[in-house]
Length: 372
Image: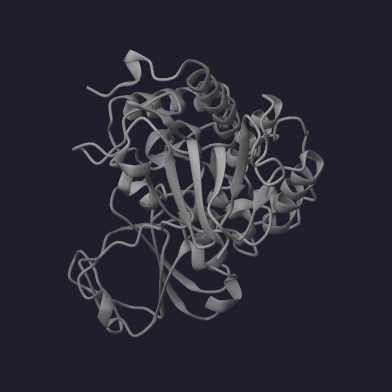
């Protein structure tokens, strides 16, 4: 186990948000904590993944570049042209790896962060970052862990009795695994529609959602629809309310795969079943539908369990934010969270978080930083 080490700023996560923060720390003159541990201002990036690419490297095989929502450029490196037929899990990580190589960020991987806590109960001093590869002491923290490792898996009556296969979106491999099967897809988000369309090519599919899906007409425009959505999420996090899914703010667009599913007759929504039985599900009307598999395309929540020792959550279960900073805690910035979950938001959030940390390091605690 390595000896305890120190950095002025620890960044947790090397997806798009974490890499943006690393870029802006470097631009602000922060040095590598791996090369200059005694430097005036240093930083390190701790990434749980074995290779560059963040959660993109884990996407399902059949999610090709052509089916992606827009991926915004990383700062300082326009993305290259990508083959529309290439799997996103190879194309996007290759771009991230090029970015890392160009700027030589101090990234350690794979390193899993187990917890972040206050040093010696000092609520104005250092933070202690405990990992499976030793401990780091830091003046401040940028958390960019995203959502991939915190899938939402609903508890449902009879779920444990089902004899078929159950899996979550993050475990989805390829549609061939479902050939000739009877498959329930549960969820009303973008991934649910994508997987419904794919699996319906080779299997009998049954689509379940809690609420009637709302499809919106027209193309998604990041400068209008995107900004409006971000404003709604900002209002929630500034009020300390837990945020919902992206689709909950935007509605579902008539994407290419949504229209393909509709044309195939697969885009037929059923209300949620009332319970799961060993061979299938009991429908809302009392009838029974036999199934071979249930795919829970039920989304993700922010992966923040390692921050629990900091007691950042409020009585609503949310985290009150001011920009990227946790309100009342100027040492902790959350990016790739709330309004910065999108790729454009992640890049902007990295810049904002670093600017806030530089102000904090230059000026110390300000009166408005203290929680009341």
